[in-house]
Length: 199
Image (cartoon, rainbow, N blue to C red; front, side):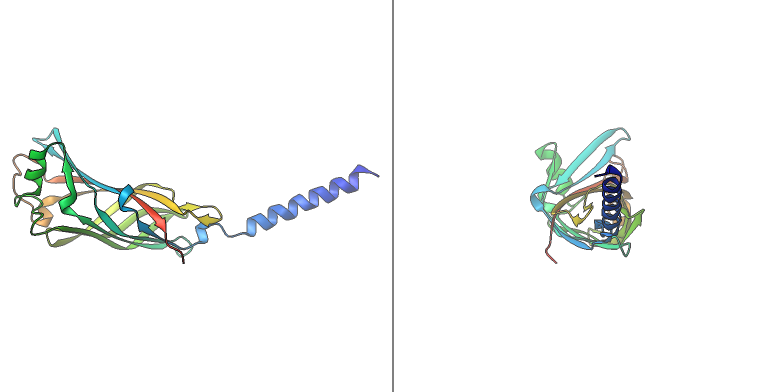
C-alpha cells in the first residue's frame, strides 16, 4: 500500500484535531468564583520611619471572595481583614500599631476592601478598582495585580493565587498620628489564595 494516502489521512486527522482544539473554550472564557483561603492568605503593609527605616506588619485573618469572568472582562473582589490579627516584628511594635493613634483595633476591628470592577488586559486580570475601608473611612484605592494563576486553559484552577499591591496615604483615612515618625505613605500587599466555589 502506498504511503501517500496514509500520510494524507494522517495529515487530515492532525488538522481536524488542531481545529477542534482551537474551538474548545479555554479558561479565558470561563467564569469562576473563589473563596479566600484564610490559612494561605496574608495581607501586609509597609511604611517608613524617618524616611528610611521600614515598619512592616501583616494580618493573618482574612475572608472573602474573588469572582472572575474573563469572557466579559469583569470581576469583583470582597475581602475582610481582622485588624486584631496584626503581627509585627516585636510585641511592642504590635501594641503601638494596634493603639488608638494608628489602627485603633478595638474600635475598628474590621478592615475591608470591595471592588466591583476588575480590568483585564489580553484576557488577564490587570487592575482591581475598588474601595478600602479603614478606621470607618472609605476611600477609592486601586490595586495593581502583579501575579495571577487563577485561569488555566480548559478549566478554572481548583486553587489559585493572586497578588496585588497598592500605595495610599493613611491621612486620607484620618490616621494622622505620629507623622513625624512614620511616613504618610503606606504600601499594601494582598497575597490571596482562593479555593474554587462549585458553580
